[in-house]
Image (cartoon, rainbow, N blue to C red; front, side):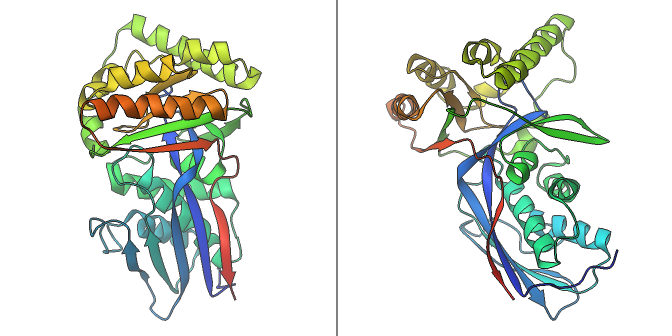
Length: 318
């Protein structure tokens, strides 16, 4: 496969995502309508991948193409399709870093989708996933799919296997809204993975399996009561929640406000809730924020439908 330039420049929006969805550690995730990142890729006279600029990161992210998630993802894609010319990348961060909302995944997913379009779409969306996941490997040490999957494919995704990759979308109740409250602290994914235990009891495993199966069945059958009963994480949440100030109170406030369920978004510190409709979601957001306000912790809030489209091309220049 020898790809060539088909356009001069492509701009893409890639959405934030919520991984794990309580009990589905590393195997489930869903996409948000906002926030997200914008990625611009264009032809380059240089015979290499170059990060031209990054905005919205306060100078934190690396410009070095060997260390940036977007450029690493792009380079693996270019190697696969046999493209030898250069690509210039701009990354415009429009979501908080270290938030648990898949910031690195959005950049990786957006970059590979943009470059694929720049080259005339030699690959389908699902075929882009392994390259986006290589960006995740740079960010946190593992090439996982529960953020890049939703960011590229949209909706709720389930990852049955990552090697070989077996990933698919799940139906879900169309009325669902997601509420995200992001305390203004940063937790690094690699740190939250480091504190996890390598062994669990058989009883914990059985309970978790039951909850994952129940959550999948609840989504497919659009059964809010079953979703609510199944959004329980007995393995990861008890360990990671201690890193998030006020977590238990915020989760209780979400459920008291009418949320179907709530949990840690990815590795945190963001806390997510699922609500049956927009009005309830707005009430849940206020209740969650109020708890963080009460302990003096500033936060950002997002209320969003589930994004069914995933990353999208928003401008092409020939």
